[in-house]
Image 1 (cartoon, rainbow, N blue to C red):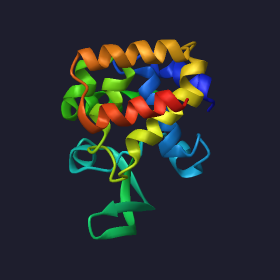
Image 2: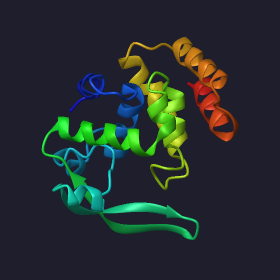
Image 3: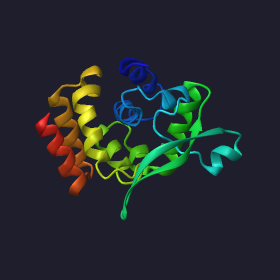
Length: 176
């Protein structure tokens, strides 16, 4: 899977394709994680009771988690998807059910990513990592310039992006 191919796939779903692609790049190590790619689990989606009860299959892998008490490597269950459509449909459903900021802002990359921050992963640097991937890799592939990213950031501020999340994203854009 290449960045371009993934971005094209993501455009077929009610998600922010740029944000979704940045997240997949981060979670799969730029599509190099054989385990994640072979299971079509591009976002590190854990295996939940809901998924297993619906007949979904799961697999276990070591993952690094950050906790208030410190970092730990743990074995976690991850969801397996048989097709890319199944994977994207499940991701789209998770966004719709559990991430209202993302669901309500599929047209704004920065609001979309801010809706994931602090919820999707235990990594305290998840948002700046995602923003950096957007600026350096995904936006250019999507035909977005630095001015486009700045305009989208201004729109996000006008629509309520604030505080630390706004500051983090603003700093990454300025450095890009």
